Amino acid sequence: MSSAYANLTRTFQRLSRFGHLSAIAGWDMQTMMPPEEAARAVRLWRS
Image (cartoon, rainbow, N blue to C red; front, side, top):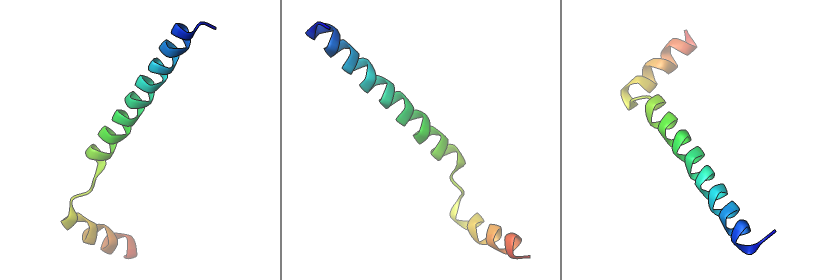
């Protein structure tokens, strides 16, 4: 495998990882519960 091809492969692997990280961060941002709702969720769960 040539050095240029190996560098290109590493670059695309890093870009892919950043894409996955971005997807996880986006999911986390969309699903994060507001602080005032946490107490309500605990009350409902214990009922």
